[in-house]
Length: 317
Image 1 (cartoon, rainbow, N blue to C red):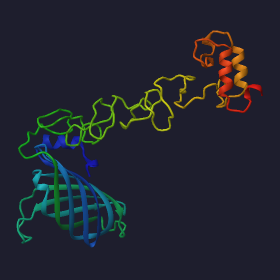
Image 2: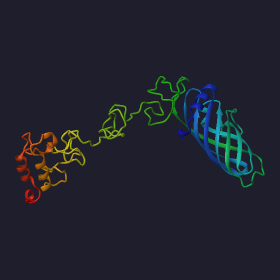
Image 3: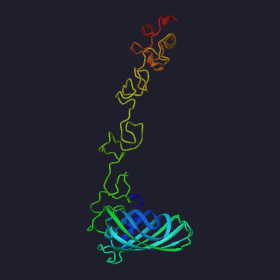
Image 4: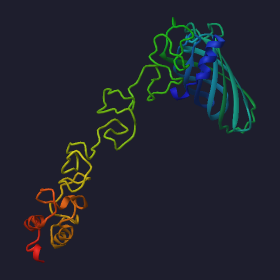
């Protein structure tokens, strides 16, 4: 129900010095009427919370509808509890209706003994009326029970201390101007752990200060395998801490085959032919041709390649 929260109504309740409600629900009426409403209530003292209202009574109209309502109450606390509502309703033919109701607290089991008027509720409904609006004006009387569940605040809280007003007040750890969870500041104005803030919070395996992937720490703050970090992870068969080929471990962190000069995962005559072509040339032209690691490409490397052949008689094929 907090998806119906409105910062504007929260502030309006404070400015007007009234309790306010905004909710939505549905109604079924055929002489005997039932309705239910769910929404958010706001108090002038900074409190707000969810409410659920169930009503039953009599109504001369016949309809099934869904509605939204805006209510005004003498105080935040007067939203909850048992109440008696008198409803007046105006219909457009079979589609839209407008209603206003006056709310009185029930102070005893005697329905005649009602408290003073403590609220009004104005609603717009969209639904189906089988009489097609032949009764343009209708009225009803309901007994309602409203459960009010306070989300934040207390009667002694200063009116200016509103979570979601963008100002960090006493008792708040943060206030980002909304009451949405999961954005670093909760709907109760408490600091939330958030991936990418550079702090290693509970449930995070890492936090490198960003939400980019492929850098070792994922966007959900989980460790990712990364070739070249010196750790053998996931599908890696080696990791020598550098992104170089032909040093025994490839830049994809897979074991390399010594003597496989052409990179076809085989040591054969093709490799021997390449090696002969590089003989006596600078080592820089083919660093992985120095199979005996003496710092030069010589006939000795050719002899070494013959011993590394993966095919029988590859040196003569």
